[in-house]
Image (cartoon, rainbow, N blue to C red; front, side):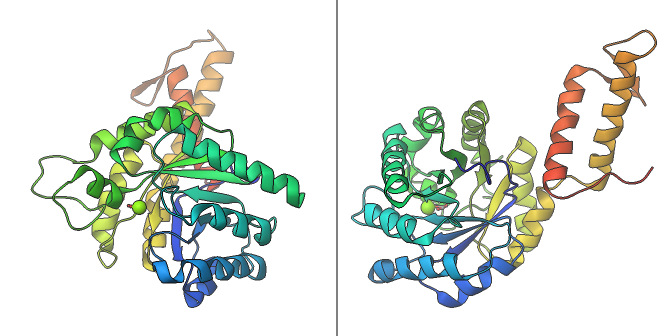
Length: 312
Ligand code: GLV
Ligand code: MG
């Protein structure tokens, strides 16, 4: 993992086709926490090789501020992967933070990338380690998600890819990552939960994939709230308009953020002063050590997003 980006927020993770110079040029200014320059499915097979150089140029010559910069390479079952990795990592320089590996099937897929990165870092004398983001988007990948999340200390995130996943499991849908009204419930609930547990058990950020109806921002907000409520850290954006909605959904509200601080203050006081109680009333709620842990998560998530406590 890269020390710089491991704990940076990734509320919005913006996909940018690596073959499209105009979109590459706009990517740093969209307000996304993380941007990935894609060499995989948003690039035509005939443009794959030329896209490598475009991606390298964009990383080296654009001002990325503190955005986490990632490149998605092609999956190991194609002929492009090793050259994608070598060309990009050897030439992009230190501003490249991470490589995203799609369609990860098992731990060995991650280990292979880790070994290749180690060699490139030795040869080029790179100072910072390159992090890895892994996509779970096949039935095999989901079955092996626990070993995948534990496969390398370079891993920073585990990501759900709903479009490829629907294809892999033969769901009768033609649009990826959207709600299916005919299904009574959330057709991906099991998948979200399984990926979340594996990611959290290994200290990774857990990211939801794309919502393909890019003009439907209310539906995006509604759907993103599902993975947010389960505990996910962020979601992909495919269009600039999606970035703002996604940043909003995955940031605590000011009210939640302030309440978390109030809980921490009240609990600190209760446990250290007077009768030193471990469980105490906070308004009309009982709080204890677990409440402190929950509140801490809000504080760290909000602080990472640049929030500050309201003056009170
Ligand atoms: C993303 O890569 C997806 O397949 O949903
Ligand atoms: Mg995919």
